[in-house]
Length: 85
Image (spheres, rainbow, N blue to C red):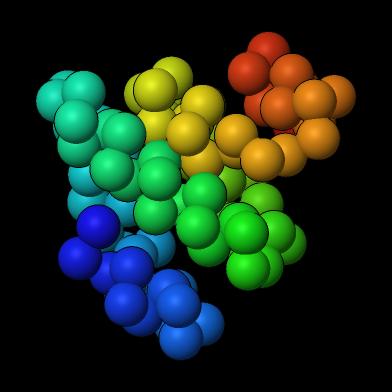
C-alpha cells in the first residue's frame, strides 16, 4: 500500500517490482494488499496490468489475483481464474 501515492501519479514500476517480490508470499493480508495495489493500477491503465499479469497470474495466490482482477469484465475475470489467458 506504500506505493499508492505513486500509483495516483501514474508511476507503476515500484508497485510492479514489489508485487514481483511478494508474488509467492503466504500471508493473506500481504496477498490482499498487493492485489489491491494491482487493482488500483488496473483502474488507471488496464493494459499495463494485463501485461504484468500475463506471465504471472498462474503463480499468484488466488486471493491476490482475485483482488487484482476485481474490476475486469466478468468473462475476462473467469478466463484468468480458469487459467485461459
